Amino acid sequence: MRGKCRFLTPTILILSLIMVMTASMDPAAANTTTLYVDPSSITDAGLVSGSNFTTNINVNDVTNLAGFEFYVNYTTAVLSATEITLGSFFPSNSVILHEETNDTLGYVRYVVNVPSGSLGINGSGTLAIINFTVESTGETILDLSLTELLDSSANVIAHEVNDGYFSNLAVHDLAVIDINADPTEVPVGEPITINVTIWNQGDLSETCNVTIYYDTTFIETRTGITLESGKNTTLTFTWNTTLVSPGNYTITAEASEVPGETDLEDNTFQSDQIVTVTPPKIYATIDVDPDALNLKSKGKWVTCYIEITDGCNVSDIDRTTVMLNGTVPVDTFWVDKPLESVIGDYDNDTIPDLMVKFDRQALIEFLKTEGFTDAEATLAISAEANGVSFDATDTIKVIRK
View 1 (cartoon, rainbow, N blue to C red):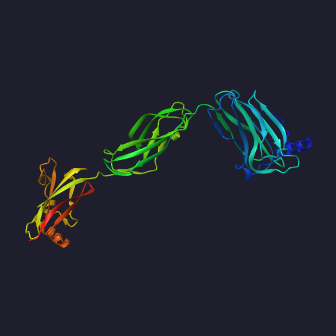
View 2 (view 1 turned 30 degrees about the horizontal axis):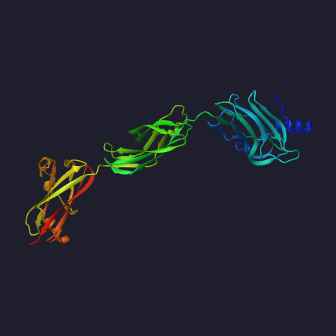
View 3 (view 1 turned 90 degrees about the vertical axis):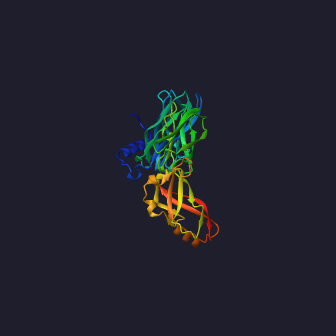
């Protein structure tokens, strides 16, 4: 048990102790006033043996503070406390009742009152400044303990306490900080460029691997990425979507853990972009027969051969969706014919063609309405295969005699 001299005269000291024992804590102050070490964390491999640094003991959001006491405990193999001085929150003529730096046991103790007759102080600020010298490489908690805050009536002020931390161990820390995909929408089979930025937040040069995923599916790993301390770099990946199912995806990148790394949360980064892979684009060509159409012809059909060069097979075409210039459908007789009777290599290029036929008179009426006489006419086929729309065009000669 230790005595705590709070005021200058014995009479005031006794009164103070009685009031401390009988006073109740102010509920309004609960969980609002904080006594803390500032900065809360000092991590610097450059603070080698013999280096000096300071740390503050601060108070936040206090009302009517007239006196305080605290201990700061530390590991003497790592640090030694050399001096403690009064901070700016209390007047310079405040009464220092106890000032001790014990480097044998590893603690600093400080007890201070406002000047006799002074009012308590409100607000936030620095109560004390502690100077430390680094003894060796290591780490230690700056343990703020046995703290007490008193108001001008010697009532205890409820408060929270936050410790500090010191380390001059080399920090190993990699972070993925950005992902950018371009474009964000492609059909199956089209590539997407993905740029991933990583940052070495540690003290030493590091070498790692970086892996990217769409949702949880692996895309690619880049190995042997070396990055100097404090530097960042952007890696460019190409995502081949050939085997990807249509859908919406999120890109994630992960930097591998390096030896000694403890902060692993930021090694993984998920993009907020949504990348959409749409059904594969269908590339088609058509050949309309006849190549020259007489508007006075009495023929029954106009034949069209559809050839798919990429994206699906002609057998996937829904013949009910095939339209000529958005107006003339495939004749129902040809819609219902078995596929094997209308698929063949009609142009002898080894690529299967789908043969469909349109009502010739309906097409002639369309051409007349659109004014195609004694000129070339571009005929467009639109259709769907596996639910994906596509189109293609061919040009024929229009004859009117």
